[in-house]
Length: 340
Ligand code: SER
Image (cartoon, rainbow, N blue to C red; front, side):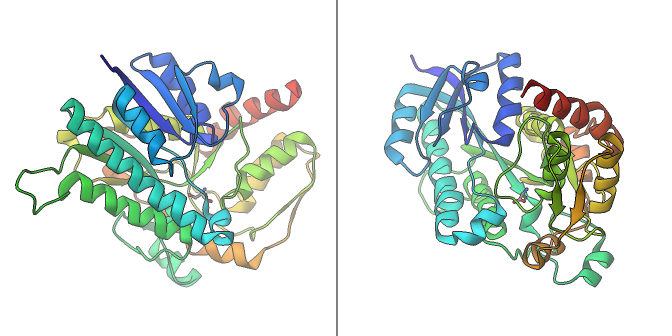
């Protein structure tokens, strides 16, 4: 008898850290992880089986298929937006071919155990592409279906995989004699920038906000790579993790779409600097715009309309801008660096 499990790819990344803590507390399913690097011991001891390997290695996925009854896939493995611009071919392999492998894996799992596999996929505000700042100001809070013209490899990858997921959920092999669609129950959140108190991101373009606060806590100088007036949506990591788990647990009948915006607050870079300086008055935070990375952030919306997520599956972030800093980020980050 194969064991019912949740499979988490890219488990050692920023989202994986918070997610594994929560899933381990819930104790609903055994946790199997797949990551190219070994997990930190702190999360490694909370999982039932840790596999070090690549989502591009189909033999590894075949072994998981043979051994486990996977009911839920949380597919986090990806190269973020800045990193992907330097290695677009590799980004396409990991972000698109890797996701296709996982969708096919989920399809086979569902065919093998006879129940749909819920497939949770984090997409991104990078799926948007707004042509210039005047249009961004006019666009305001954008809905899921506006401005779908991404300017980065990562954004193209995410948008395409949103579509692929919907294809598996609704139209897969639509000309076959037997219906095959619907076995993958694809559900996606389009995340804003995520800020974690536990980890520092690597390779993203929204990283200026988390980098500012982690540098301040460490007493290191930091030059922010975007202009003070730069504005995009953000969310504290615990709310990001809750969003994934809430969407996974939602009743399918309530879901009116496969991709949902989520967001909690949208400060300018200057407002982020002000709250960080308030908490760490000696921090040396300066400005040094990287025009190229600025161009990417300027193409992302200043805010997103997440009312569909709130209505359909009760998305409700706990942390607004002030609480995210005062009750989560500042205390967590202080403690992290005190411990060394
Ligand atoms: N945080 C991500 C990035 O900057 C956006 O999805 O790449």
